[in-house]
Image (tube, rainbow, N blue to C red; front, side, top):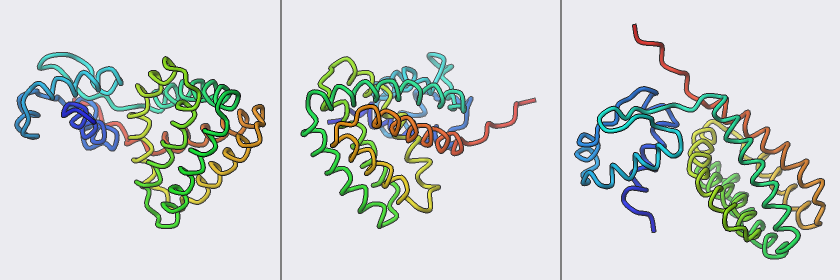
Length: 216
């Protein structure tokens, strides 16, 4: 179950990613506590989470938001790819059947969301699909790394998904990946996963809100 600080971090993260809290916006502890009707403890917890994710900088009364640039997203997705390649190879070798079952369940939700043009549900299923690699791999430290980056990645996917008129092509890419994984075609899985994540990276970068003009 999420803590109050985590829920607050989720909302602030969403606002930062979609541009509702532009880069340089000051996050004043007492103002946030009053706005969200919480004590300052959860606010401090939320700021700590966002600082670890690189979405805020500073301390005390000088905490400000930091938007993600195209270079930030490129770095984030490069790290994600390295984690996923290791996880999926390990999962295929040790727990392929369990992995395939979880992927199929995620694909059912993904197809339903695509049919309904529900980008929010689609992103939830997308994250479930990719998280299955780490669950099946059984590598604790690798899962910790994925869980650290996953909230930011999920927030970016939600923001970019709202701009997608047709979710079916992305669903097909996931079906192709699942079929290769089921056939234990590790080399082909790696090629397809790289291509898929590169496409995703370009989509996320295109959804980045423009930076505000410098203050005079």
